[in-house]
Length: 394
Image (cartoon, rainbow, N blue to C red):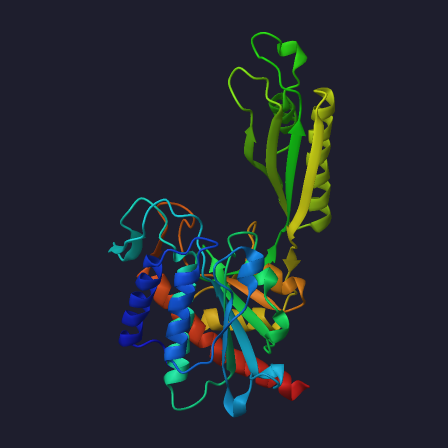
């Protein structure tokens, strides 16, 4: 397909700015979902919304549609060799200030002191404008394109975890959701464990009978001090993110909650470091004569993309054709790809050029926004070549 026209580039930026103005922190994606659904239906597409919101704790569900390829390829009941999936998420991390997108030195920023929401609304805008291109043509696209916009991605991928992947007819898929330079392809992502430790001690007057108390906060502090946190090794990280406890300055704290996480590309290593974190909390609780209640949950499972996998080689060709140098990377973060890979759906997460996501200085350049749009257009062409070759080979 032809690269983006000037009119398409202008509309892409307008769509992106409009999306950023819509507040959609995790759990409150309704307005953003409504905007996206209206856009897709305005293109003549049949759009469905699932009930994942009930499970994920959101006021909206995952939004799904499909654009048929030649001969209806990629439609429900058709062969899965005729389409690819493109995915982005509708939610953002919590907002510290309203979003007022402005152009500064060739890039979009929030005029207020808070996130812009380019993570992941740059990808949402790109996919919407790709759909507009495909549906406005007199001819069907060279390959079918299925589109999924998820909710609550920023909350341990809750939306994609609740999505019924059997609805997808595609051979493989792409998620545009890594805030690094365009060209990077995430070929490995970590397994993630969350550990919640609730310590129970004994309250006492801190100034009169401190010896009668059992401080849950002291137990938590001892346990945390014994842990190896931060960069544990090349593949593994550990963190204690929140500590909450106590009731008053003059009361020996009876309760304390510690919430931590472990991530590792090596699944066995993730489990081992999680066990170490638990052991340190238990030893500290025992030493302080406190009780410990534990909740341990694997939030998502890591993956590694096989060398030469179809979506990988297809993406590499598309990036090269658009003038970007493909680079395989290992990420410490997760994306909806983690959910897809867990269920055996081959997919790749592509970097989208967003900078400093989750920070008040978040931005994305106009050049990156438009560059990823060209990459998305080229992906459709390359996927058609990839899938036609697979069909011939079979």
